[in-house]
Image (cartoon, rainbow, N blue to C red; front, side, top):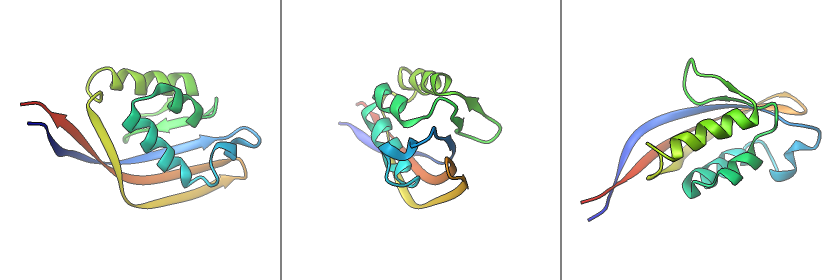
Length: 119
């Protein structure tokens, strides 16, 4: 029987440095959390690639900083071919957006990861 269990509660900090008109894929910066969750749960690197701008900064956990879309997608892809390949994520409520400029924002949300366990 397959069970889902809550693996960990994590906070994601994102700095999205959008190119001009970069919010075209999202109505608001807060929509980025929903798009991230869709990309994670589908394990689709093409969705992640569209999610980040070329000059994005990804801070998945404290003291970790990855710069640039290609490096971010590579890091996430590496996780999804190993430890994260059977995980799903769901948001647990709050999304906080701090706009830095017209074309840049920090998006903070808390999510719960679950892993499918085999027999």
